[in-house]
Length: 171
Image (cartoon, rainbow, N blue to C red; front, side, top):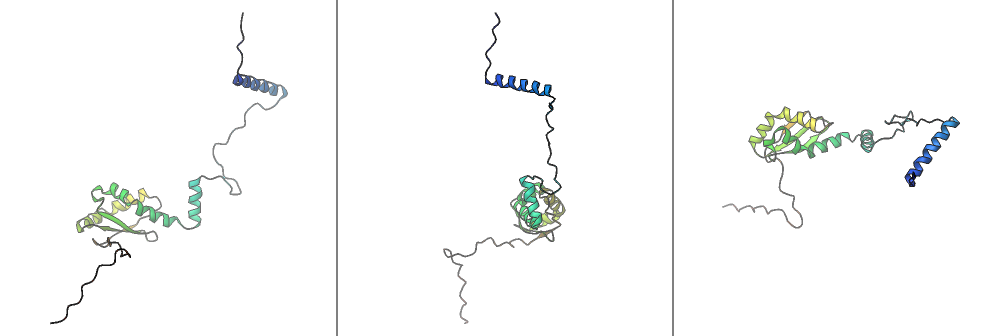
């Protein structure tokens, strides 16, 4: 004898779906599934759905914050930029300031030799900075003299400023 296997919940649901589709075909209902939209087409009223990155980008454009973000990213990524352009200078040159309006990047080397090397590779460093940080638009490189950055922290209440020598009385 042929035993019919007992159907489980999933099989019963599948059979019920097939029966419903057959009944719909007999009644003349549409059997094709509606085509799903894959892309986000902009609506005419400007209420298109946006991803988080796109929404933040639009907000930054509206509030003129793009230049500020670009300058911050150039300074933050300067070690990576330097590692690509001239790995031998990593740790010996610091980015001090980036003016997004003029496109000028100020850097400070540890020693005069490193400053000379930065001047030699200036065009390559500028090109690498523009590749690594889109929207930065670095146009000029200004090499500060060695030691131009004050590396000693300002005096605090815990650590007063060093005492200046007293003038000596004339003899």
